[in-house]
Length: 257
Ligand SMILES: NC(=O)c1ccc[n+]([C@@H]2O[C@H](COP(=O)([O-])OP(=O)(O)OC[C@H]3O[C@@H](n4cnc5c(N)ncnc54)[C@H](O)[C@@H]3O)[C@@H](O)[C@H]2O)c1
Image 1 (cartoon, rainbow, N blue to C red):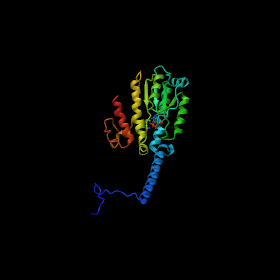
Image 2: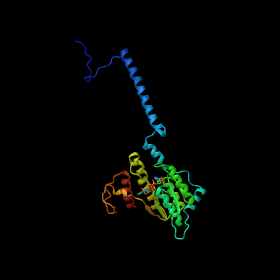
Image 3: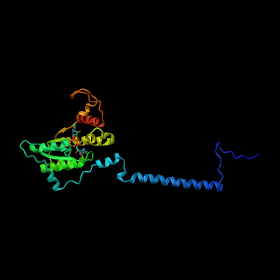
Image 4: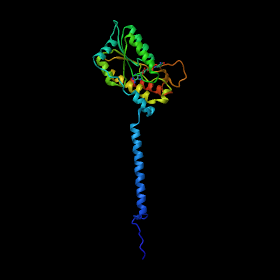
């Protein structure tokens, strides 16, 4: 009877160790090594690529990360105290977030003129030309308002400011504004308008004395409504942009505290 090399499992046959097979094994090994190297190279590129080549999302988070300049020390604290010092009899001391912004600059200057103590806080982000914000900073500096460069998500910095100054009020204007920019950089809206708002509210809640907070929402919360003029009783559940949605979320968040 002819011996047939039948495998125990149908379909499985023993491979013969011919020189041809050895050659194939070598070539497979070479291929495996090559693709492993390619794979490792890709991993290396992913983790060590330069920031300039990173995605807009990552680079923005880097730019917007808590990049508070070094702060602290007697000279810095003195600057903070001098700026926040109340100059009129019934004056208040106000922390103005977003002080280098369009509204924040005017509010800070007006409060200062009235004799209130004013300290600014702004991260000077690049949503629009930061040189404009720097010019406003210089303008406020001349009126005696110091803007601390920092992010509202930097809770340690916020706590430090409250340790130095017993603010009676917080004018919270720091935000990611604009409707179209959400297409380019959605995370910036969450970072400033939601996470940042929560940081500010939490710090204020724990401060002693507790400051009164004024916060700016936006008419964009009325979204797709066609009725004008707007009324606070109008629907606000049809936002037409991420900006509007984060401002609406801010209104709800403020209610929880
Ligand atoms: N300008 C308007 O017509 C208008 C209308 C409705 C509501 N608002 C609201 O008023 C406020 C001020 O608006 P604006 O026009 O002055 O905007 P703006 O962009 O000129 O000013 C905002 C400032 O906040 C700063 N900022 C943003 N994120 C920050 C962060 N995470 N930490 C620290 N600083 C940060 C920015 O650098 C900027 O200087 C915003 O809350 C905006 O939503 C403005």
